[in-house]
Image (tube, rainbow, N blue to C red; front, top):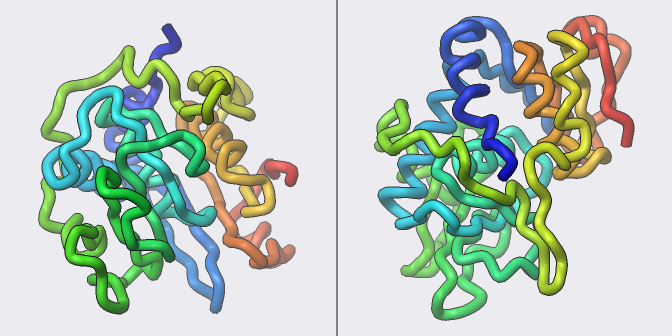
Length: 237
């Protein structure tokens, strides 16, 4: 069984990298969000607690990330993994829980849906939600910023769930997941690289105490940006 590296990575973020940048996001309209290791760990803990206490996930639950490349997508992935869940990147996985940024209505009577407003300062979903859909932005801040559950070292057995007839992906098979062996770096991850590669790169970067600079869809990584963030490596599209 592949070992879940997330508890170890989060411990490193909140101790050795507590005040230094772990994740820097460049979004549309010149949005820039910087999360230190401690702040990133707090967001992940709140999300894990939200998943366990509000959405009733258990180890082995599959959580679909129906989200674009975004810093909150990485938070959701880490939060699900910390809670012992697998994540899914497509609807083919038959996930029990779905986080979405634009399709908040449940696709079936058994699906649990969390609507995720993407702007950093959003305090709630910008509009009316179906009665059975949870508003992540409105709810998540009320949860504890330390994970209240156990440490799942052996779960999930599959990091990213596959579709029908398709095997899932363990942590060590995620693209770029072993990158941390190269030492701490500041790595640019453009949206064009895709969510799976970015998640693998993030695990490798944070394992080595580095920083991930994430750019949203259509955001150009200018020479000024690369110099300002002191980028040392780039994840190819």
